[in-house]
Image (cartoon, rainbow, N blue to C red):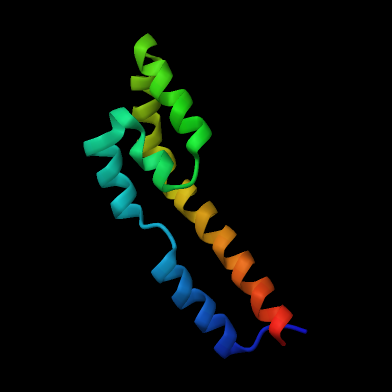
Length: 94
């Protein structure tokens, strides 16, 4: 059974409220990128720790620069996870 328009709107509203923000992710990356705050914020703690460790080898700095381009995709992936979770919750209630 597909979701109603009202249920879909509720899910999208909750994603906007509960999901990550591209702007916040960029601010964390710019100001706290050396501690990989943006990766922790986006739910990637394993790669965040790895990134911190690699800073000692200068590789982490390059990785941080690459993250500036990867942030929008990471935000979309996190929003999709939330969307799937909320959709399953809505379908289980119906």
